[in-house]
Length: 226
Image (cartoon, rainbow, N blue to C red; front, side):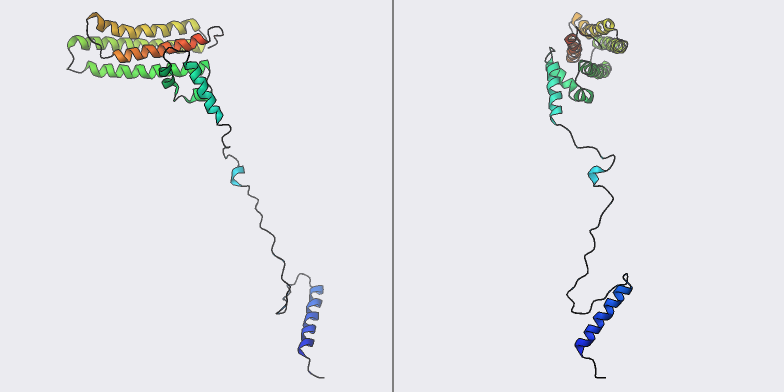
């Protein structure tokens, strides 16, 4: 038998490969060198993990940034109804409760909290001055009197808070009004002896802050539901 030519061998190899693919479809087929046929590309990789923005527990993006501006406008509205609006705005600027929901009740609560903090600061300041030997004995005595009236003011503030909790608006209003008198009593002692009060600025500021609380109350006097 004459030797097979190169083309005959090529055809025979292709035939054998075809027979194998029919008999064993799962078998891998190695194409002869020079074939132009390419294996199909692998399917694109898929992932069952959702994108990070859809992961459970991930905070949602901010909603409407204009809400913050709306809250600021409401705060200005409330403070414009007080006699000391700048002091009102300063007292409310760091209140998250007011920024979240500016209402008569949240504004009043924030203003009362600011009075509480300021009164404690004034008391500490008076306590330090009362131990200062640079002041004469009478001035130190009057400073101690102011410490006492600051304590009375703090007691009245707590009574006002409790009155709000139980819905006693009469006690609430009388306790806040009494606080203004407390701070005035501190200054009256210095005035009686013609001594310049080192607490004058503190007392005036506290009176103004408490007055702002009463102004907010008066805004809702007809529908008083604190």
